[in-house]
Length: 41
Image (cartoon, rainbow, N blue to C red; front, side, top):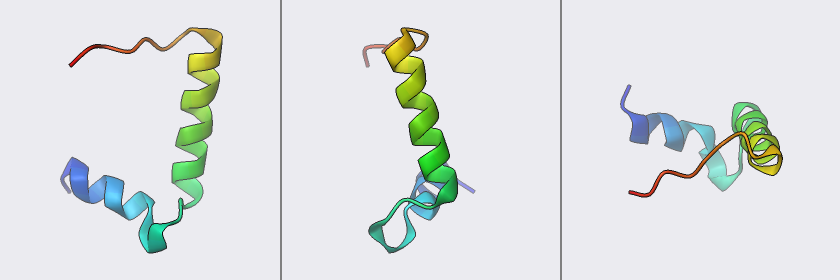
């Protein structure tokens, strides 16, 4: 399964599924704590 297809599966029906909500919350916590860093493209 490609990355694009995986990401689309997280948002079936244009709403985040359970896994998408968990991942989004995890990233929000990591960024708020300064753990995650944004890498320029």
